[in-house]
Image 1 (cartoon, helix red, strand yellow):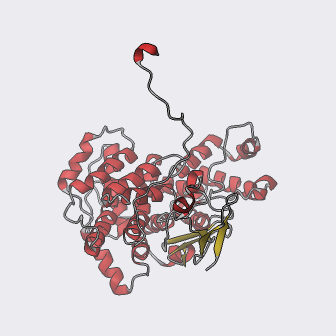
Image 2 (image 1 turned 90 degrees about the vertical axis):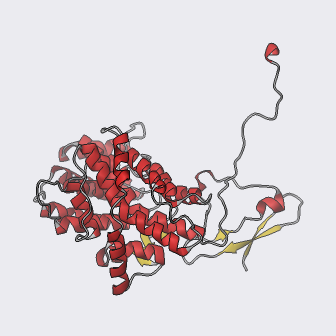
Length: 428
């Protein structure tokens, strides 16, 4: 076994094993560091720390590669639907024809939510942000579905997975309807997963609604592209919450709350707002220059990624989907899409952006697609959460079944006051 050696002053060198992954950087196993040396490591943001072993998702930021269970995201988006990908994330393999049919039937039977849960929405103001509503409603699921809380058993874990994957579209659609002052639309068992979501989002009782297959496919791809993304902030939140033994509904609610942060799940909304701020193709050059100016607070949203140092593989797929959707809706000359293409062209050719590898990411296009479909900007992150729940639940189960699983307990570098005694009040 390869080892790393730590030398501390005149002490004898201490060796730590080096773990080699399937893909990615080797990791120094420092689990015994505290016991052997009395020292901890300091890594703000955990940028150089592997917090777990996982076989679910792998990202190579330098190559611009995203794999779900070893499969490239491009192949999954082109050949599979979202429920096949959800099955893959959970079980490690793509389903057979029989498994796919059985899984889709199971999800279809769980799309209804408890009738009392629908009344939960009335406790929120009508103008409440849909993500605030989602956090509350998803967290409340544990009060309605407490018949499967023995998570040591695979049957209860499967039941929890199926329920939350099935009910998230219903909960998201109800959050939209409540916010809009429109009546809830109950799910239909004759529709597919994405089509059913569109029906609950955009259908009304007074007329028939038929989901457009091109738009349904676009949403399906958006779900696939956002289904998981390794150990990001919200996924780590779900794992940390789950490490205490918390029920999966509470863990997913915690993940949703984390995703709501503007530095995490709100990027596509921010990108759309930026395009609206630019307003016209003639002003692209002006804003490009502002983005280069270190003294200007303006940031070019939708370009670059904390992980991808090359082209975001999801962005290439979303670019095509964006074109398909706008063509289907007769919006080829849409002002925002033309503006986005002009911005993309200049940024890809400009020496400043090329040198810094600030390529368009998935958020650059997904906001335009969702807006064209009819999703309001306040719902963008809810759509993100709906899709990411598949990955969160897979990560939650993987953590629970890991023989090395322990409750999370990060250490700290304490920089507060040294120990001191309380002075009597009369002497202060």
